[in-house]
Length: 455
Ligand code: S3P
Image (cartoon, rainbow, N blue to C red; front, side, top):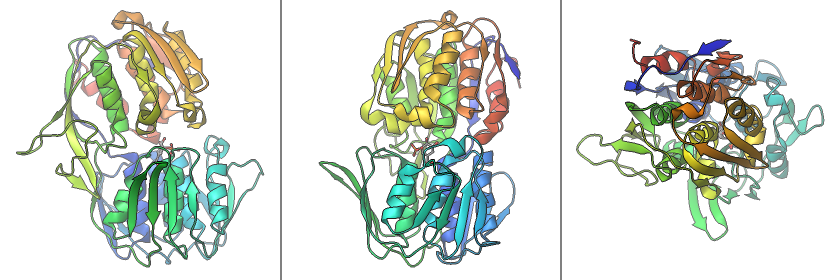
């Protein structure tokens, strides 16, 4: 349990948010499958990413840590994974990303595997990966016959497919693309809207033959079978999904002015910035070096990048926010930020509608329900819809009041309501804040560092 009080004054300071969770997972995965050593800096040492490390260690990969986000992954090659037992029993904790992407890799191995996670992971939908992997020739079954993990996987020689994904999900896309490295012919995934493309960028950096082509019916991502991946150093940028909490907090607490260093601004991830700008937010991408930073939404190849990932410093100043309609193509590029966007919208003036976000119902918790319950308790005018929210913001910080919040063991719910508490009147109580360890173990320390009166 954690008691939180409103911020006594404006948020000020400069902060480096921890490494991107999606990029950290993928760096360990591709590093394990590469021929040679991959040096990773800025790795996110959170529970989810440690689950991925644990799985690969169980498959024989040596991973050495030298502290402060530095890792060396001693790759075993695409066909070099060596399980401790057959089947390999792999525990993925709370990480849906580990579970779904690993399933693609394991489908092509010469040994069997069982993938299982915690209660939340084992209740999340897996049919979305079972179907395409089965079509590729793998045997993937839900042990409890409910289309959820635990999954039993028997690897096989995989075949190329063209797969039109019913959901814009980077986990599904990445699962199929990594399985495709081992197939006997090319694999194409067609997405209606491009979901986060870290896997494609990193595969390209590791030498795989992968293309993305925009066509009338969506994005066609094609990977060719591959015999080896060549390691490159990976400097993981700061996680925009973690930065989002401080961005929202600075926009909501009067007179705030903060800088967030080295935040990943991949255009498939930056819609939180784009949506907030539509709502009137003052978020500036600061120039790095002699060249000017691009605006959000552009592909700024000239910015410092690694494994194809662009990043920038952000300056955020308190702003008068107004309501907006947020949906369609913006949603996949800000799916994890929608809970905290709803919090910001509750302090904006006017109506905000968030739609096309039914995926929120099958995240670590049902986030539509969790956000609606919490913000209603804080006095916001919010209504849940099947695929989002309708929020009638009253404007100003005093529109929210402190309340008891059920975090549902969901890190993003806990952090979103910590932000809400700063701009509310009275005390807010989080029932269990420890879940922030999933993506941001030092979240409360970093938040405190921006609050006046703290070091
Ligand atoms: C992730 C993709 C997203 C996101 C998750 C991380 C990834 O999930 O919500 O936190 O690293 O690929 P979906 O691909 O299921 O939308």
